[in-house]
Amino acid sequence: MGRDLVQEVSDRVTDRTSKDRHLSNLLDRVGHKEGVRHAFVKPLDGYKREVESASFDEFMDEARSFPEYEPLKVAFLEIGRFSVFFEVLGWEASETERQRK
Image 1 (cartoon, helix red, strand yellow):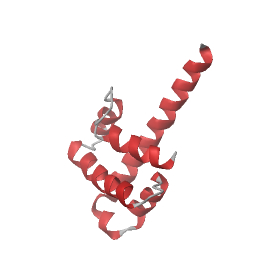
Image 2 (tube, helix red, strand yellow):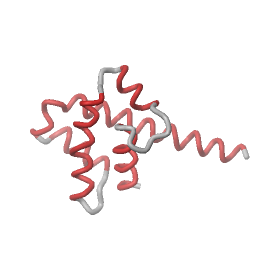
Image 3 (tube, one colour):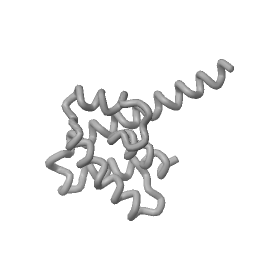
Image 4 (cartoon, helix red, strand yellow):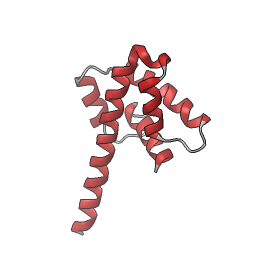
C-alpha cells in the first residue's frame, strides 16, 4: 500500500489522473493553489523514484523535519493530511458501495 499511496496522492494532488477535482478544489479553497501543490508533488515524485519501498508516512516525516522543506512545511503537511483523508474516504465509499451490492 505504501508505494501505491504515494502514487495515488501524487496523481490526485495535481489532477494528473483524477476523474474529479474534489481534492484539488478543496486545496484551492484552503489556500493551497496549483503552484504549491506542484511544489509538494515534485519532491514526492523524486522520493518515489529514489526509495524502493516508498512510504507516504516516511515522506511526510521528511517534510516535517528536513530543513529544505521549512519554507513550505505547513502547506506540505496540510496537503498530506488532506490527501490521506481523501484516500481513506474514497476507499470507505467504494467498500460501502461494494457491500450494498
